[in-house]
Amino acid sequence: MNSELQIKKVASPRLRREFILFPYRLYRDNPYWVPPLLSEEKKFLSERYNPFLKNNRIELFMCWRGNETLGRIAAILNLDHQRQHRDRCGFFGMFECVDDPRVAAMLLRAASDWLSANGADTLRGPTSFSLNSTSGLLIDGFSLPPAILMAYNLPYYQALLEKLGFIQVMRFFAYEVSNQTIKFPRVVDKLEKRLLDSGFRFRYMDFAQAERDMAIIIDLFNQAWADNWGFVPATFEEGLDDFKKMKMFAKPDLVIIAEKNGRPVGFSFSLPDVNQAIQPLAGRLFPFNWLRLLRNLKKIDRIRVMLMGVAKEYRNLGIDLVFYKKTAENAVRQGFFKAEMSWILESNEPMNRVLRHINAHITKTYAIYEKSLAQPEAGMPS
Image 1: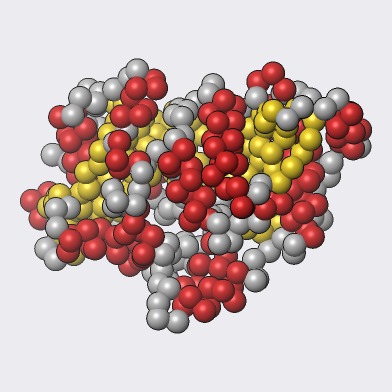
Image 2: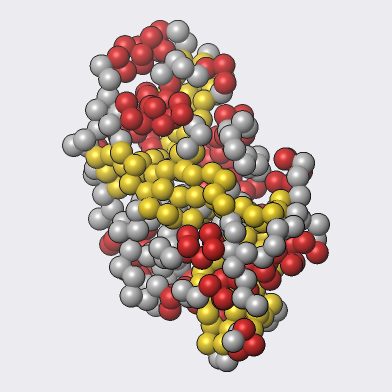
């Protein structure tokens, strides 16, 4: 009966700790889930450490039966999104749940009620906390671990959402390629020479000037992605904070900036897939796992091409192909032999076409779901 289930708002340090720990039990026997570092999860939920929380609001809920946690969810009031898109869309994220439609319904109702009370008319997700962070519900590709900052969830989540009346509003893909399978069109070398002859230059990020180069990358990201579905501009504070977290394992020659006569016109940002090093640590660095992490970092053999963008007036010149070629060459030289390119919107046909041209193939598919908050609660137990 529904009466044995209870929703609790996370309003104490004890409940917050339980909110963080729940997935570690839920996925305990799953060989593909990558346990995030507990220290980072705590910071992610702290306004002191997460710039998103300084300008936007969240509320955390859990579902219990007696003393047993059965699920969790974050209701997200993304004011940056609402200002950008002039809508009243609310979001949910950090959704984890046992395979019980009643639990899922109660969690999503709690998020919906809080967002409705704060003026939202639509519920969309999962995003944690924005599309500029880890987002999407994995709907295909469950037998592969996620790359760094990519989502992983249990296969039954899709059915839980769809039974409650949520519909897919966008899909995006993760592509993969290896040094054995990648194939560049012969024209790429000619394209690069033509670009160099006409005043273009490709340089690598200068970590000694990290703030300068991150400002360039964030500005280019906001230019290049402005027309993409769901786009919200990234702030300098958010971008610099993300880079500081990644700097320890980032590689300068995997971050490339294209310039035309000294003016930045495009960028590509790739990272070693640190999830390979983190997965065996069970979420803990101390007391001795930090030594294990340092050893594991040397064994990483894959990168993730996380972001790429070219200013509108310089598209269709082959800059993106040159980015991929240089990234592949530099990655192999450092011992990285596989790459995931993610995420790529289904609606971004030019980028999907480029990836097909270099013989990349889709390994994972993700979806964003949406439901009007004015809709009847489909699937809700009576």
